[in-house]
Amino acid sequence: MLNEAISMKITPSVKSHINEVDWDNLPFGKVFTDHMLVMDYNNGKWQAPEIMPFGNLSLHPATSAIHYGQSIFEGMKANKSEDGEKVILFRPDLNAKRFKESCERMCMPVIPEDVFVELIRKFTEVESNWIPSREGYSLYLRPFLFATDDFIGIRPSETYKFVIFACPVGAYYSEPVRVKIEEHYTRASRGGVGRAKTAGNYGAALYPAKQGQLQGFHQLVWTDGIEHKYIEESGTMNIVFVINGVLVTPSEESDTILRGTTKRSVIEVAESWGMKVEERQVSVEEVVNGVKDGSISEAFGAGTAATIAHIAKIGFRDEILDLPAIETRTFSNKVQKYLDDLKTGKVEDTFGWCVIV
Image (cartoon, rainbow, N blue to C red; front, top):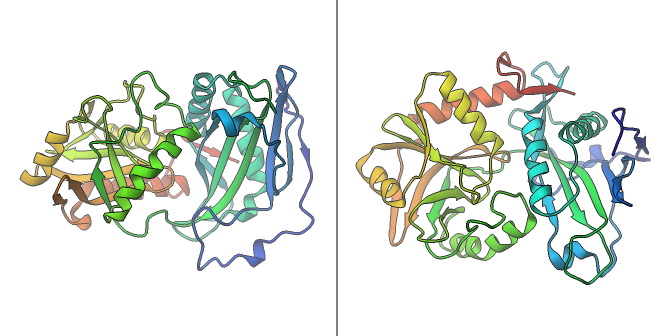
């Protein structure tokens, strides 16, 4: 395993293309920074990582990740402090923990949590000039791991490649989102890989999500895979409700729900503010009736890409349910501002969540 010092080779890019970026028209996930970090696993151990110029990867046609799906990833952001003097990572320890759990579930070699955080920190330091100073902008970091054996046979690979790359990004959603409660297709079933952040989960979701988009929705609200009676999560986000003044969200005890850093942070902030929080089963019936009778005053997605994505409309069968106006939503607006301010050093980090690069 890597030693504590993490010996790392850095090969700088010959020429930066940062001045070619149109910062006024920045699409999410399509502009990439100058470098990437690459670390290989072979002969039963991790090799020394290297930060090198960003470029294509060369793969054998029999690369096992392509055929058998051993591929996992994480998503996180780096921000600059308000004065521009500091680079801040938000709770990378939770991403490291989830990445480790995904490795274990997918029969992949674990990267120790402290090593994962240090690799993220070092890579972010190298690419820090790519972190936008504009409000609402950040540097999106994508660490991922995939199997690399050139072998056709169903077994865990013996070799792997870990990569980190980054994209400067603006807002993921430009407007409040419209979601549809999905009662036929399933994101994950008990005993499956729903808790792992593995590529196959997202591939399986593409078709039903596309059908929802054709009907005018941004995302689906996934329900349980057995009866489709209980809310689980929404597309790229966890889902949260304010019901009669109580913060309510589906429990993560089930192995069908991805454990989210943003949702966990929302919960802990709410509790620190004295708000009652319930992590429990949330039925479709409760949500539909709650929107209709007004007991649900707020609904939002919580995730790295969007932070807080206000839900404006919920589609259920042949109905479109309208939620209260965004400006009336006391909690979600307040927590969104608080988390944004925390990530940029505008408020004191009393939780100890921010890692200074």
